[in-house]
Length: 178
Image (tube, rainbow, N blue to C red; front, top):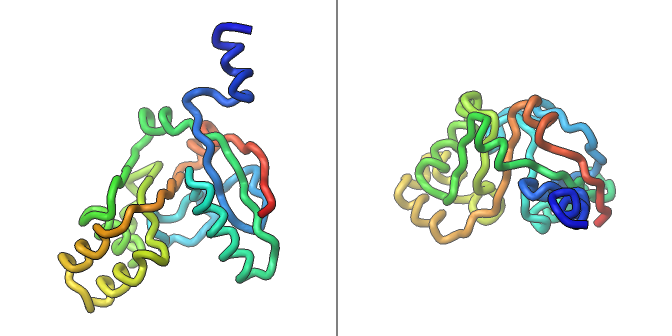
C-alpha cells in the first residue's frame, strides 16, 4: 500500500513526528499524571521520560533495587515536534551555566520550572551529581564546576509539566520487563 496510510502502517502505527521515549520504574504507567512526583527534582514536578532506553533501564533497576520489586520500562510515543511548536519549552543542549543554575534553583525548591510546560536536557546523575552537590554546598566555585561538567556528554531527560500535553502528545505503547 502506498501513500501516507501505507507509510503509517509500515511504521507500525507510529507517526513520523513521534519518537519513542521510556519511563523506568516498577509499575505500569498507562496514564501518567504530571504532578504526581516530588517538586525539587532537576526540572521540577512533572512526568519524566527519556529517549535513551539504557538510561531508563538503569533508572528502573536502581528504583527496583530500592523497592525490592522487579524493574519495568514503560514505552510511549511522544510528539516532541508538536510540543516544541505549541508549548512553553526550555531545552538544554549541554551541561552549561544555564543548566547548572536551573538545576540548583530547582533542587533548592525555587519555582523555576513553573514558566514551562516542557523541559529537556541533561540529567544530574551519578556522573555529574558530585559536582552539582559540591557547587550547591559552596565547596566548589561555578567556573570549576562548569569545567568539570563540560567533560561529560549529557544523558537526556524530558520533563512534561503540563497534563494537557501528556494527554495530547504522549501515547502509551506498552511495557518491557528487564
